[in-house]
Structure formats: structure tokens, C-alpha cells
Image 1 (cartoon, rainbow, N blue to C red):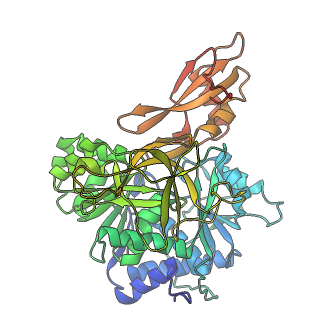
Image 2: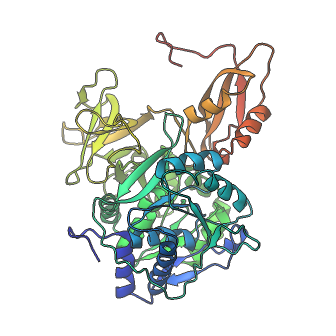
Image 3: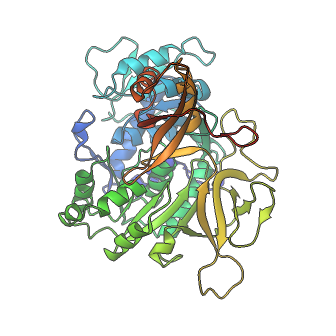
Length: 530
């Protein structure tokens, strides 16, 4: 089915794939699934995926989920994660996926903001179900009602209020047929910001469709592509960059989790992968291991998209020398999106820093001077990138609207400048060059970390007067988290002290600082800002 405007939902695209190519392979687990999750690796055709989605949707319905309900999901990159997201779409429910690294600290905030009816999770070696049940139990008395917790894996002697789902399916279908409205919220993803708490990013059916249409067109993807997804299917990178283009083309998607170079390369060879995405850290690591690269046949790969942090020109050039196109991608959960391909920026080194100025219908970008708030029209002057259009969200959950300027443009917090390539026969800039991030975000291995969130927690230590969380460079991960701390009189807080506190707060492990420096005072500007 489709909306009245012809905008297909995720569920619609699954049904279309099952109708047109029922026996084609649709979705594949990583071969090392048993190392991080229960059950044997699964391979589903489009017909089998469609049946699995319907069956899960019927089970969600039994637990009280319907159109407009929020369903929290916390699973690694396995078939059950994708099927759960799609089952929400089939019911008209709102999928609220959480990264598997999120613990009690992030889950409590997310549950309060999104008010889920159901929490879909599972027991894992690194995460007992007790934590999920304890957090959900804290919300039993809230106005929206108790949160049911359901596991997609067998749990043995599980607590009586834990529901068990059967992702293998038994041929059931939900009782209610749902027709998606293009402006209906399809997902709520989470992004770190400068406020010290995660931000919920609602995205509609139409926003996701606009995002996938743009990428499919720019990248030339079609039904014959075979995609490999190493990004968690919980935010723009995994959902927008992989899941939506896969659904839109009716192609094949192989999942990868966690990041292991040998397994990743083995999947490229065994599944004849043609397209994948990789954060700069992974792209760098692979290229820096020529022996490992040469040990497998990766000749099927024609294109790798990379982004979330500036690309190294040597990396883009190195892959080009191997005959593989690196696509530079700039994007955010909020919906800002630019792509630099070989066709639009032929020079590999330049593609690492430059993006064509977008000219998509309905989309408008401009740069604004951060001091004068005037629009920039000349090359070489840095300014904040601001954007509006069909891919851009309408605002954070509970927002006061300050993420948009008076003209309705989303303030990305990223600094670019207008540019022209040498020898261009025009006086009008045609490119955008990435300069820096104005928001205080640390990007570690492609994961966004709010400095303010870390600072707020560490400052609760009695031994800490104040602190500043900062990024320090790392060749493999891009950035790591460091702390400058002003100690209380007579105290000498250590990294171990900080880690003990943050672990007690159940903070996600990727956010943990890895270096502490004690200083007498934090440097401040004339108005007192650090």
C-alpha cells in the first residue's frame, strides 16, 4: 500500500519486494552472529522477510501496540532488529531504536521522552535482561501506562512479566490494515547535543523517502546491488544510509556487527558485495592493512561511502588506486545531507573536503557568519551551514525551536566555506568546503558524544571543581575523549575515579574518557566561556 501522495512506507517497500521478487535474497545476518547474539545466522528472501515482519507485527499488536504507539528497540545488527523496525511500520507504530551501548542513563532519558508502549530487547553476553527490566519497571506508574518488555531470544527462567517473541514466525498477520500518512512519525532516533542530554529526532515517512530517493539517484543504486551495513541500524547512518536505499531498490542487505576487519572483508568476498559504508576510521584501518586487503577478493566492490568526520585525502586516493570509489557523505540525524561522488568531484584528494552545492528540488542551503548573522555569498569566508527541505526534521522532542533560525533553516552547527576549484571558468562558487564543527561534539569511531553530558556527570565528583571534555586526535578512531579537570583543594582525581563514577551511572562505554589532565584553571574568554 502507499499513502495518498504515493509516498511508500518502509512496510510498503517490503511488501513490494515480496510481490516482485519473492525468492530473491533480501536480508542476511553476519556469519559470526553466534559470537555476539543467540541463534544461527539467518538468510531471508523477500517473501520470508515480509512474512516475518507481519508475524512480529501481530505479536506487537497482542502487546497493545497500534498506530501512533512508540516501540523502543535495543538490539545489535541482526535480522531481528531490522524486522522489528519494519514491524513497527506495518502497524503505523513509531520505532524508537537505541544503540546497544546505551545503558540505564540513556534509556531512562529516552523512555521519558518517547514514552514507549513496548521495549524489544534480548539477553546478550554483555548485557543481562535485568537492566532492561529494572529501567522499564521505573516507568510503570507513568501516565502512558506500563512498558512491556519483550525478548526476541529464549531466556530460560525469565521473570514472569517478560514477554517472549518468536521472530521465526508462524504465519500470523496483524488484524488492522494501516495506511501510512506521509507526515506521520515513523522513527525517533537519538543524537548527542550540547545540552548535556540525548536529543530525540522524530522523522516522518516522507522524510525517510526523500532521503533514500536522493541517495539512490546520486549513487546509482539498483536492484542488483548487494549492500553491506557495518553501521548500527539505529540512526541516520544505518537507517538512512543503508536500510532505506536497500528497501527502495529491493536489493540485498548483509548486516555486520561488531566491527571486525576479517569478518567484514570476508563478507565482501563471500556475498559479492558491491556497495558498503564505512566511517573514516574503518576506511583508514583497512587501507593501512594491505596484507589483510590482499588476502581476500574484494573486486566486487565498486563504491564505499564514508563520512561522519572529515576524510583524509590519502585515504580517498588510496582506495581510488585500488579502483574503488570513495563517496564523501555529510549527513545528520536531523536531515542535512550532501554527497560528493567521483562524477561531481573527480579529484580524489579534493573529494575528501569538498561537496557540490546541493540543488535538489525543495532544498535550500546557505552559510551564515557566526558573528554578524549575515548570509555569506563570497568564497573563502567561513560560516555555519543552514538547511531546510524535505529531508530535514521538524524539531527535537520537547524543543523550544532554537535549532532553527528565524527563516526556518536548521542550524547544523557545522562550519563550511564557499569554494571554487582551480581553473573553473566561473566567478560563482560551486562547492562547499568543510572547515570545522561549531558544536561541542566529539566523534569517536563515527559515534557522536556530547561533551556537556560527560562534563555534567564528572562535575558531580567531590574531588572535581570543574572540568572540560575535549576531543584529542586518534588515527584509528578519529577522536577520543579527554578531560581537563580543576581539582578540589587537596584532591587528585584520577582517570580510574572518573571511570568508576561514569560506569556507576551506566553510561555507554564508547563515551568513556581515556585521558585525564589536571590543570589549575580552565582557559576562558572575556565573557567567561571556556
